[in-house]
Image (cartoon, rainbow over the protein chains, first blue to last red):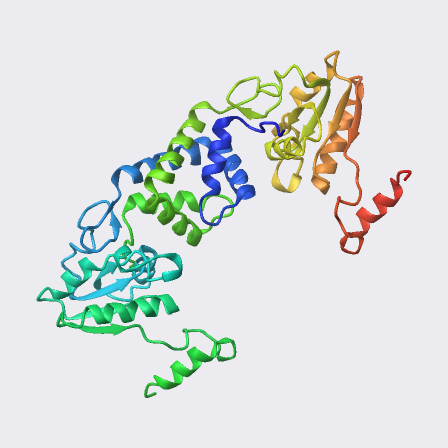
Length: 201
Length: 201
């Protein structure tokens, strides 16, 4: 029989922290102690921030982004190009594109990719809303900014078929050498794609 | 100028999560999204657990352990051997000894080690309480279970000097080959210590 090491409040906190991605049981214990030692600087503010997030954060009913307003700030931003919908798998991908300042369009968050092995089918993705949005008169292009994985590409093909009658052009991200990348470290598929899509210098 | 990627509530949450040990900016973003997506299963319970920890957790005025009672459950446990005080650097070390069920004594948490480079002097450690406790009539032994680092050993020597007149025997953890350890991978100091402290087979 193992003795209770810390009180139930601390044990519960450690258990919950251990469920975060990137933290295991040992690092969760470290994080819990770190928090308890920095009660006023970190523990209380974090509790408040989580509480606020729980109360305020909504999923945008138009695009699936998360924000404190529905529709979200991107969907209601008049400076965004409303003629392009950039389709992403996850909010993290949306954030990555926004950080890179890569596109000034609106987004559509699928909430996953088709993956028969994981039991994710078309009904589990935010697809009905996408087709409806693509049929709107001012939408001209749907950019499928899904990951370059097998599941991502399968999903892209599936969406292309779905959008066949919607009167929009469907595009995808370019394949090629990452900026700063070294050819010697790249896989064959990327190199072949980069040669095939070569551009005039 | 970079555009605000998410609302201030999410940005604040990410910033606070990034301050946890083991999480950086990228993993904090991942953790924040993970929490927001699991609002009822994880976000709300974690906010509650942090709130509860902030309200309930105290530092034991006797030993420096953290618990929801002061004195802590270990200090008030009548089944503990009150004649031995096990001195540790940090609550994490106390937890490690308790998990291993290594000793049934009471503890004394120093809250650090002497480290001139980091500006940690004797006044920053919980030393006055230790001397007072060691002078109590029923205390027979002080076990210095500090880390086998330079700072830990310096602190152990310092405490040994402090306890010179307290009428207790001072002991330290044995050095040797870790259980399951391979000699080929051990450092010279550990090997030499293991040979020097060899025991009859």
